[in-house]
Length: 134
Image (cartoon, rainbow, N blue to C red; front, side):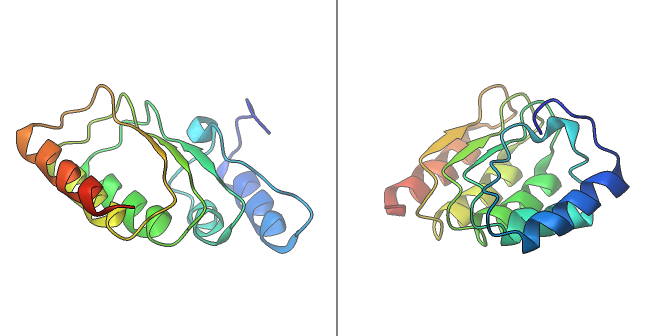
């Protein structure tokens, strides 16, 4: 489904069907074309045990958006191994939400935070979380 521009209703329909289809193993590689505010898609991300890669690059995510990503993606889905968050507006508060999630998520192996607004305190939160993340 890469490269498609889904509307909310279409994304919701696809999300509902994927939740009940055990034969399809979707990887949400580029979520930029799907509305990330869609509640059905959020539910798909939370419940789909096969999603290993998620790309939120360039989605203009801020600290409050990171709270949602941290709580609903990283703390629930235990197979996400790759999370692209580059080119957003994530600051120290968002880094702290992410750090809290990393303390309990042991499956993430690649995290891209390039070109965000994370300062020294945010980097410290992340560094401490990565020490305990095994």
